[in-house]
Length: 290
Ligand SMILES: [Zn+2]
Image 1 (cartoon, rainbow, N blue to C red):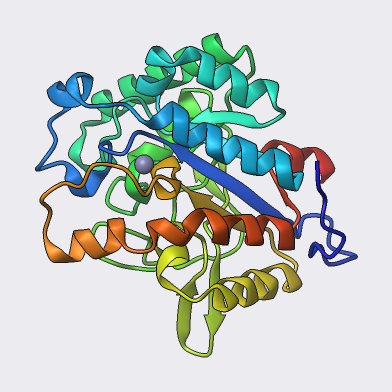
Image 2 (cartoon, rainbow, N blue to C red):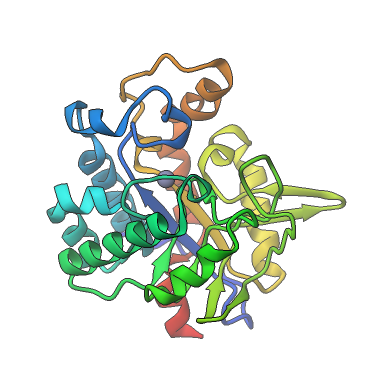
């Protein structure tokens, strides 16, 4: 195991740590593909989630990184050994829901059933408590105010889904960038927004995913540095399919094609450099250190 001595962790800020998160889903379980890939066809498509998640686990092991793996219940049901590997290697298993449906497309009862089923299977398979949630496509927005209460009622303690930039169907108007409490009638949920770097009037998303593949690496590194130096945890995310340049291509429109496929070839190399540069941990370890 290699631990780079130059990893960034500002002294004096107990909670100012970079948090590495993975949304564990297969290459076809992406909201932007909903009109191309029906749920009923999932079983018929080539699954690549085990292989690509194992690549991320290997990168974590090489760089001394721990992370939180927000895993789909659907994946845990089909690949329980993968979820066990994640837990056995010291990472946190958390929930990405069961069916990867954007919350505003669900009724309250449907959402409750989805997060309940996901948590049950993930706890059963991993043998660890599941307390964290990330919504498919960061869809825990102001459109669905009831969803936060449902998460608390279903045993979740924290969430990392409220992206602090406003875009249609994505992000939150309040733009709250720092960890905060979401109060509900059932109790409070701790919210840890993905990392956004304020530069003047601009809010630059440096949290990972497509942003990580499209933006220059120096900008991501500087943004994460800035968030950490402000005394806040910097939450970063990636998907297993982002380190799988050989995944089948779907006949999607230009914008989705750029967002989804651009930069896949260089992603693993860039991720290794990032994990060597910053000392990443999981939410579980972040809470323990506080
Ligand atoms: Zn997802």
